Structures are given as C-alpha cells and as structure tokens.
Length: 289
Image (cartoon, rainbow, N blue to C red; front, side, top):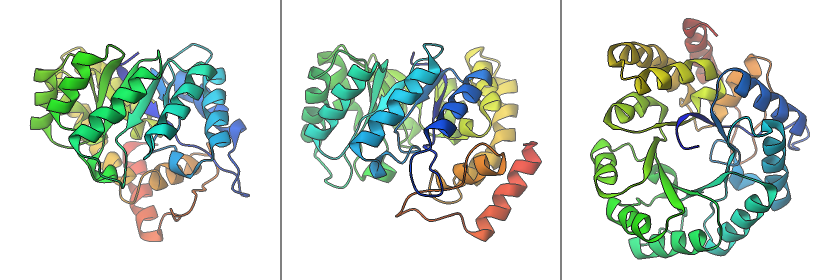
C-alpha cells in the first residue's frame, strides 16, 4: 500500500462550483489504467480544506467505489483541530478507505508535544494505517524526526511518513530513527529520496502524467539510477511548471487542457494567470503531452 506511484488526486468542480463526481470517477479510472498504484482523495491537491464534511465523504466514497480494490485508497483526513481529524478519520474508515493521510495541523502551530498528542489521539481512534504528512511550507510547523520516532515506537498503526519538508538530511534522520515507510511528498525530490531508500511518491505530477511518474518510480525501485536520473531530469521542467503557482491551480489547468476536467478551483484560490499558463503549455508541449 505504501509504495510506488501514488496520486494525490484533484477534486474536480463544475461551473456552478459543485464537486463533479462523474469527472472524478473518470479520473480514477484513467489513473489506474495509466499505472498509478494508489490514490489519495482529499489531500492538499484535492483542496480538502474547502470541502464541506458531506463533500469530503462523497469524494472519498466515490474514489473508493471507482477504484474497486484495484489500488489502495488512502483518504486525507487531516485538519487543524484534533477532534475534526478524528471524526474525518472514523468516517473514512466506515467508508472503506485502506488508510488515512494526516497532515500536520496548519495555522495553530503546535509544539512537538502537541503534534505527538495530536497523532496519538488519531492513531488511537482508528484501526486503519496512518500516514504522517509533514509539509512545513503549508502548515508552518515541522514534524521533527524525534517526534516521528516517538510515534513510530508507540503506535503500530502509524506506518508511513509523507515527506514534503524539502530537507534531505531530515529525511535521512527519519529513516535512521524510525521503522516508518518514507514516501516523497515532493515530485522534484522523488529521485534523490528513492535513492536514499524512500519507497515511492505521493505525487501531484502524476495527475497529469501518471505513466511518466510510474516509470520513474519503477526505475528508481529497480536501482537503475542512471536511467532514473535521466527520467527525473526530463520530468523536472514539467514538475516546476506544475508548481509555478499554488498547487493544484496549475495541475487543474493542465488537466483541463487535456480535456479531463473543467478548470475550476475554489476561492481563495484563483485561476492560473496568463503568464503562468503560457509557461505551463510550453512545458507540457516539450514533455509531449
């Protein structure tokens, strides 16, 4: 479950602003056909913070139904309140998710002890495997290796760590101090992280080029590092373009250009600027999509 090319899937909206479950189901089927090995609905890329509780449940349920056990579905259930995270986690378990991805709480900036207690309460609330998700750029707090080690040693269902901290020395410390499976949470660092021992990536880029991200991950896993480096360098300009503005704005623009979804994000996100759109189109054309 916690390896390979895993897509943090976008949440499509229609022109009226409603969640487009039909488009979401089509995306799930396409992702699996293209080789994606796992799906994460309601993560950062899924604009989960803008979804109502009912919408979150509907998205998770539809992804689980569409995946139909072909690949694992790891539901994003994190929030800034521990009680809300526990409620969302229990709901995901009832819906049939295979695991949960729990981001560090944003805005309230808990201390390391607060982070420990937050994840401890979530882990105790569910039988599902829990993936810790560290993304200081969004949450304004860094889950330190020592806290990961404490959680890993005390809770058997805390099993993996999504690393979007962009700090390879810290990544190595998590690997050294814990039994956690490590997944890259940054497309641009998948190659070096897997060279260090990560088992795969929770990817934004795979929304747009699932086949290419799967090929990179498979090549890294096979330890064919010269070939993996070549694939990484080929992907890098497209990855950079997909983060030219706040994720998932460019990814949704790219998917709309491919005819996969309508290009709508929810406020406070805004549509992709014209300048960024041209850069994205150029990167997509050069990559061959």
